[in-house]
Length: 359
Image 1 (tube, rainbow, N blue to C red):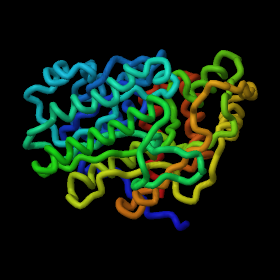
Image 2 (cartoon, rainbow, N blue to C red):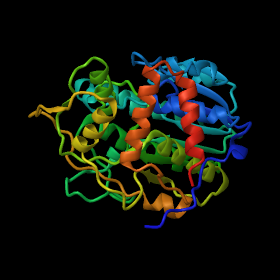
Image 3 (spheres, one colour):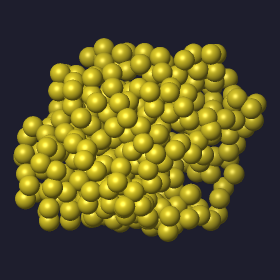
Image 4 (tube, helix red, strand yellow):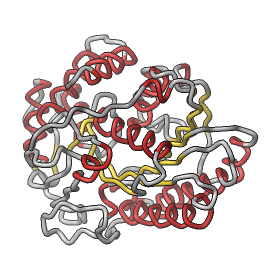
C-alpha cells in the first residue's frame, strides 16, 4: 500500500487553544501533554497522581510543562465539577482510565467506576459550555466483541468485552454515544471516541505491560516472563497513537461531518508481530537476557487482536508511520538514553522533533 503524505498535528491550530487533558499523569497522557504544550496549547491536566515508580510525569516534570496540573479522582463527580467550575475549554481529550487488564480482574468494580462513571462524570460536567468545540474520548482496541477469528476489527463491529477492562471500555463507548446524542449534538458540539491499539514508547513503567516488564527485567539483570508469546497485538508507537488523536480532534472541531468513532493502530498492510517476536527484538536492543515462557492457565486475555485503521486513513489522511520493529527501536533508544542520564523531557521532545520530520 502506498504511503500517504503524512497528516500531522497542526501547531497553528493548537497554538493558544484551551485544552482539557485528562490522564496527563499517565504514560500516553504525559506524551500528549508535552506535545500539546510544545505546540502552544494552554493545557489543563486532570488526573489522579501517577501510580508508577518511576513515572514519566515526574521524570519529565510534566506538572510544570502544562499550564495547570490538578489531581482529581474522576470517580468523584462532585470533585470533577468543583475542579472545572468556571473554567472555559475549547477542546477536551479524555485519556484518564484504569488501563490494565489484569488489574481489572483483581478489582473489577474500581475499573468500571473509573472507566465508565469517570467518563460520565466528565461529560456531565462539560454539558452546556458554549465555548466547547469538540470532545474526544479515548477508549481501546479491546472494545470489540472478540471471537478470536483473527480478523481485524472495524468501527462498525459489535462492541463487547470478556474481561472487566474491555467491557468497561465498551461501556464507556455507549455512555459517550448517549451523552452525545442526548446533549452535545443538540448544542453543536461533536463528541467522538478513538479506539487505539497497543501502545509502546519510552517512559512507560506500568506493571503488566510488555515493554515496561522487559525494561525492568533488563535493568535488574532479570528475565522477562511471557504468558502468551504467540499472541498478536496491534502494536503502535505512542507518537503515532497521540498524533492520530490530535489530528482527529482537529477534524472534529472543524468538520461537523467527521465520523464519531475511529480506530488508530498499525498501518494497514503492516506486518503482524507476535508478543514473542516483539520481546525478542526489545531484549536484544537492551542487551537483556532472553525471555522465557510461563503459561498462565487462568488467563482470559485474547490470543489474537487486530484493528483496521483504514478509515482513519480515508477520512483524516492519517496513518501510523512507525511499523512495529521501528517502534521497538525508537522505544529502546529512549530507555537506553534515559538510563545513561538523559533528561526525560528532552528525550521526549527530541523524538517528537524526529517524528515531525518524517515524510
